[in-house]
Image (cartoon, rainbow, N blue to C red; front, side):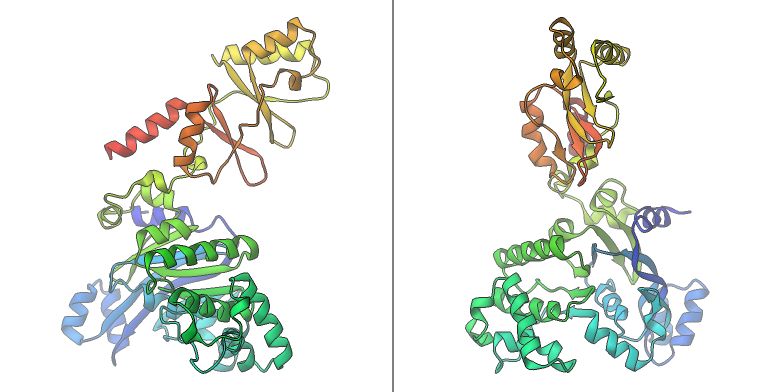
Length: 415
């Protein structure tokens, strides 16, 4: 397995699949079969164009999009990213390959079944707002439901709910021309959301906005995603945007998928020089989180109801064995109860403490794994002990020490 295959396989099978793309190709031209044969023979797309005039837009793309994630497709102009997202809902017909959505092959669907899928469970948001200028905000938001034949009262009720989610309910009776660009894009987003799709495709959806409005829309999308857990495929050429909103990122070059992975995967283990060049000059600490740095090397002790002086002594012995001054106390569900020190345990023995909880140091210092690394820096400086890192369920996943953090920062600076 080469570096690209390793990078792609590293992050694709962890979650439950919403979309599976297998060996997807798109050739633009009147002789696609000839171009496909030339690809099989190992010819480069540039040579195929020169010899035949056929344009290879997407070449042998394979990846998985997991349920509930924001999957960002990015690359330079002409890399094939917009073609790829349009293949997913067959706005562009594939030349070869499979697009499996919820177990069904979109590439093989009848036109009626595909139309039903687009109307009821798959929405698309484009860079251009494409709002109907003589219709009100609520009428624009409800347009997809109108096409689907939903009655006026029901579609307006559902549209108003979504407008409230995106902060536009007070503008429901306004016309698009009365709104700012950012507000118009919110209407476009609301229109896509009103049909309640499980899969949303967004092609450069925020790129026409100024930086302030763009960040604002990213915040709206992140908030909605946290609440609703839709699957979102988001095309972007902006690295900061991809790193900020994407659970995983797909890097494309010349119609090929070069690497798929989390921001940490790609920042730390770029598949090739093209991907590495993409991130040259990026302050990676802006995008790394506590869980990306956490290590499992610290001492952990289980809190049990029958802990007594013998429990304190056993905890001290374990800490001495591993030459540690501090230890994390976990309950039986692996959740962090708190931190103890050799001194606090000794004091409990001398003062007839009854359980490990009597030896806990004051304060709650557990840090969520998705905390940006820049926010962790101050906490590491403030606390003398290692910081326990927990997942979304509060379960212990590792620790960050001053040494670990300094080593990480030095490595990034050196790179």
